[in-house]
Amino acid sequence: LGSAKLVATAVILVGIDRWNRVPVLEKSLLATAACGAALAFASGPVVAIAIMILWRAVFQFGFGSLNFVLLGELFPAGVKGRLVALEIIPSSAWNFASSYMFSRALDAGFLAPLLIAQACVAVLGALVV
Image (cartoon, rainbow, N blue to C red; front, top):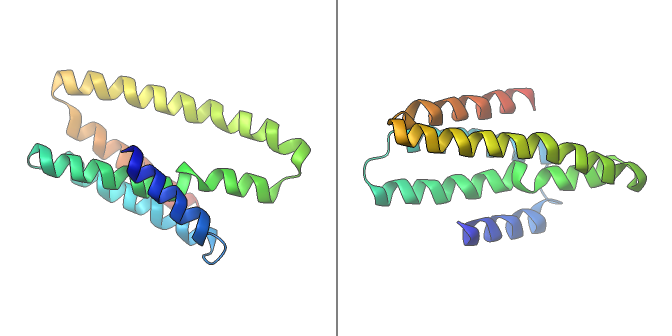
């Protein structure tokens, strides 16, 4: 997963000036939603691992690294540090809730509905962008 994130971050940082940021973010969110839905119905561990790696990579194209690029471009340096701190709070809360719910859903055999719910959140994000 770490290698996929590294490659995705390198690609987005090199290509971000050639691409428009909004379509990249929209496509990343829609691809994240598709991977989440596919993972919910994956058959076998090899397929699930491949989808999980792809899911992490496409997420990294959008919210994984692009939000920090946008903050740096949209706001002056004096405000940027505080905004990054504010952005990290809900992001960390979502990561904690997602990890907590993932482990609970895995134990209860309720993983597919959780992945579908996360895919729906990604689709809503694409609609807002």
